[in-house]
Image 1 (cartoon, rainbow over the protein chains, first blue to last red):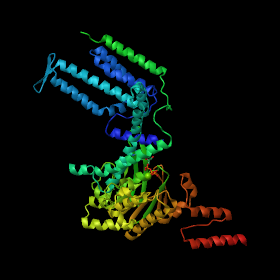
Image 2 (image 1 turned 180 degrees about the horizontal axis):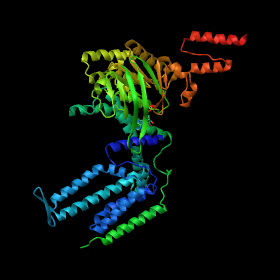
Image 3 (image 1 turned 60 degrees about the vertical axis):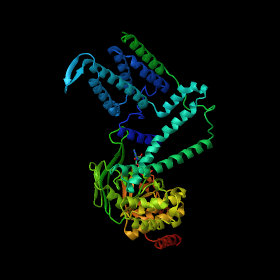
Length: 282
Length: 288
Ligand SMILES: Nc1ncnc2c1ncn2[C@@H]1O[C@H](COP(=O)(O)OP(=O)(O)OP(=O)(O)O)[C@@H](O)[C@H]1O
Ligand SMILES: [Mg+2]
């Protein structure tokens, strides 16, 4: 087990405890993992746009097959994905129920507690929930199969053209990767300090609200102190090793578009084209 | 207070792909008033073990008994705060926990949380500051203006001011200068003797384990590897080297001497004079 993995794990735990899927990388080394992060991001970006064009069974089916097929290819266990989606399930169900009672189109199907449920409401609720589900599923695939470093590299490369307009692309990417690198460290630190203060009699979990807010101070002050210290040390270490900004800097990992990326793009374009052709235009 | 671990397992991130067993089937008993050294290679689970002593974590299976308090997998400890009052932990790099505006307030933080009366607090702050060798003129300073060694002392004083019955030390002298290390260890030892404090010391220094402890626990990958008096444990250098540990210099010296003279020199923790006599005998044998 490497050092970086173990700090990663901590991030994982916190995410799992909060049942939050964002930022949860699951290394299965599938074909999706090995894809160019830029291509993954492009596909997701356009998927998010084009799914709003779907308006009938066939076009929705196409987008669904694409997302589910992609999920299968990642080899990430379903249990894992489902667990991460738990809080989103709630939102999806909530959206569905809201639609049931608010939308008044089509014919009345049944009455629930005196409230009429329309056929159109059932349809719209289902459609919007499905769309919501697909969006979350596909975007979570990005973080499940791409390390934060790859995401950063991808963002830097995709934003590259903006450099011409003096947009600080490199600096932005650097900030992103440094923050990502330090999230697990900070979480680890938080855990340590909260343990230490709990030992000194601080009660973070029970007691009146005011007390609990006050209990945060002994946690936050040491955290800030150490974060600033770390930032200063990092800046010094970078300078000592001759870091002078992004000008003329080369990369250790060059991103490369491979056959699998082209294949994924082609499949995606076919799906979108098919969906655009089969959707209703009346 | 007696401390008993019964078949304790502890798993980080149970039921996830990142599951990690940090403690495995760990059982031992530490009588009240004893001084125990816990040693083990890095990552062997020492800090994880210590967290149990304050109810910060509960065993995944098995049970932990600390005085009146019992920790079990499913049950939330009822009186975690009472337990924490009786068991003081000096964590690894405790200076990271300082946060108050003044040294005085930071030392008073623990006692205040545990409901000690203000007058008593003032007394204890002075006492524990003196015990750790802090100049009283520093009490009104900000803890962040102090040197690393002074900060460490403030943090330790903050734990002592609660007056725990059990003192748990996780590498309390790591990163201090040699003189400071000795001072702090001697201070802990004095408290242990004077107040019959049950003391548990996690350390990478075999010399400290030999000097201060009367009982020793060797961990390897979360399991109990050896247990006994330090002298007994250190007699098996080979076993210790298997788990990346070594013995104090005196044992290394005696081993080399035995090899050289082809005769066993036994060391049972007797004083240095007695040892010198044995060695003189050996040397005499050789020359006759
Ligand atoms: N919060 C955590 N989440 C996941 N794994 C952890 C966590 N804390 C510790 N571990 C793992 O548990 C094992 C035991 O860790 P522990 O901190 O108890 O070791 P240690 O004996 O104190 O080591 P050291 O001498 O370096 O302080 C290690 O393998 C570590 O990677
Ligand atoms: Mg440790």
